[in-house]
Structures are given as C-alpha cells and as structure tokens.
Length: 469
Ligand code: C2O
Ligand code: CU
Ligand code: CU
View: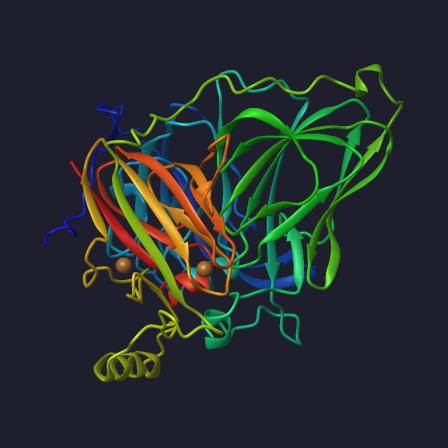
C-alpha cells in the first residue's frame, strides 16, 4: 500500500486551487516555556508562542490558513486542525497524512477554511502528553454575516493534574487512566486561568464559544440566571437556537457556541458538576444600569445548512463496536507475546505509550498517533458516497467519538431518532449507548475515527477509513 506517499504542495478543496503561495506564512512556534497557568506562577509547560492556551487564530470563512509550525520541543509533533474539512495532507496525523515534524524542523500548513465556526488546533503526536503539557488553541472562522453581538468570547476549558510540587504530573499513559476514564486533573481552568471573572455591561449580547480541550474530562455545564441559547455545536450552526436549560454535556474535543444576554447586574457562574459536586469554572459579572434591551428576542435560525445531505437509502452502512476497558472482559484486546515483548523494548528505550485496553470491532489500534502502516481501513468508500455509521458502546465507560475530515448528522440514540439530527464532528456515547450517524464521504484520503479521551485512543480506541478519490 502506498498511502504514505504524503501529498505536499498545493492543496485544494472543492476543486478550487489555492492562490499563489504568500511570501510569509504566519509562524507558530512550539517550545518549552514557563507561564502563569493553572494557578501556578511559573509552570513549566509546552506552549505555542509561549502562551497557554495558544493564540486564538481568527480568520474569515474562505480565507487561507497559511502557517508554519516550528518545532522547538524536545519531541516530534504535528498540528491537527480539529473539525476543519481540509485536504487530507493537512490533517496532521503522523504516519498517515504527514511525517512527524522532528525537533528543530518546520512544517507549513496551508488550506482554505470552508466553514465558519469554532474549531481548535492541537498536536496529534504523543497527544495525551503534548496536550496536557499545554499545546492547544482555538481556531475561529468568522461568518460573512455572523449573528449580531457586542462581544465574542472564546473559552478553552481544561483540567490539569498537578503533583505535590505543583508541577504537571508526568504519569502520562499510566494503565489506570488508559483503562478507566482517562487522565483527569484536579485543577480546572478557563483559558489557563482558575475561576476567571469576565466583566460585562448590562444589556450586552455576547457570543460565548466553549471548547473542551481536556484530555478526558466531560464537562457538565450550567449557567443560571442569564438568557442563553445554543447556536452551534462543533462549529456547525444549530438549525434553531435552543435555550440553555439544565446541564450541557461537553466531551473532550467538542465545542458549543452560545448567545448569552447580560441581563440584571450580578455575578453569574459557569459551573461544572461531577461526582464530587459542583465547581465554578468562570464567572460573568454584569454591571451597570439594567437596560431596556435586557430582554432581547431569541436569536434567529441558522442562515444556511453548510453541509451536503447524506442519502440514507443509498448509504454504505458500517458498525463500530467499542469494546474493552476496565470492569468489562468483553472485547478486551489480545496482545501476542511478540507484540508484548516489542512494547516492553520500546518502553525500555524511553517510549511513552499505553498498553492495549480498548478495541474497535475486536481490534486494538495501538501507537495510533505514530504509525498507521500496520492498520487496514475499517471501511472504504468512493468519494461522494453517503455513509451510515453505528457506534455501539459495549463498554462501561463514556466515549466522545471523533471523525476526521467530515462532520456527520447524529440520527438516533438507542433507537430514538433525534428530531434535529444535529451536525457534529464528535459524538458523546454513554456506557452501552448505540448511536447512529450519517455523512457524505466527500473528502478524499485516509481519515481517523477515534475516541477523544486521549488515553483511550492511545490504548487502542481508534481506527481509519478511506475515501477514494
Ligand atoms: Cu482533536 Cu484526532 O483529534
Ligand atoms: Cu492507526
Ligand atoms: Cu473513550
């Protein structure tokens, strides 16, 4: 198979060639740094442009992102542009779409941005470690006619596992995290800060873009006391604005955009809830004289449906059974003695990697973020074919399943059709859930499907599909 003939040079989408190479790409330097983050004054991190999170990259729809990644880390790296429908060669998956960028080297990412929305960027090499050390940032693509707001806030949510010295705990890939719920941290942050306060004027209308950049934490978010509507999920507009009521579950990798109206003066906390109770992530502090505009009408429906509609009758159907994980012997991966020995030698040589713990259709895809040579595609379809994909979670754990290069409609959950059939690039599965999605496979290349609990992916919970040109 010659699928690792990486395609460099001019990339195009929708048949339109990119404009001639600009002389100077934007530079994004990945390097070690010490920054004030996660409640520590000088935390040693890995950072883009010495900032945690990395700079917010903002473009207009249709713009060309032209950016040179300079790797000054002690480790190889790549950038994956999560949620962007981009040419395969720009997808940042080492061993599949490009060579890893070695320390000291650079790589130029260059592609058009076809959809407006909230996206993000992060490494796809040594991902559980590199994200946790601080490498992640938001990528915002503005619409030509965005909903009218007075302010646009981007909140990247994360959690940090700090050791007794207040440093990032280095027990990446440990078997307990991999086989259970992934790496959870005790310190919650918004844009790297603990419980930040955002001042608003009464009467302001705000667009609030939430990105879950945590390795494994599923945020259960509430914001009480202010009128708020969900207007987009994973970058894609919701058909109609939905009032935010109760808990919003946001799994790793997922995004949610809200319109929030600052009403009466006061403090309004954004809270996360887990088994140990509620915690404040950040606070909106509204001040000033209450304003006549305080009760504004709900935002209107989405201006357009950006993606082609899958043809459900003619679709290629495929089921992905998720197996393994602690508390469950079903689908636990088999490792041959030779594989185990090879892994032992790699670990001895200093490699950081997970032991197998998870399967898709009985297979554990290990070292997924480094080598894909050994993997066959789960399915392949000709370009333009519709695909119906069933995720069947036979494990005792939650999994946010992410598809590269495409968005899908979520058709049903446990046999119950979802009336809105929302567009997403990541869908959250509760234990034992069965979720059906559909999409038009219109982006040629080799693409990953994986759990965005990064430790689960490292432990085998990922696979590939091919869209033939
Ligand atoms: Cu956000 Cu394959 O990743
Ligand atoms: Cu693979
Ligand atoms: Cu998972």
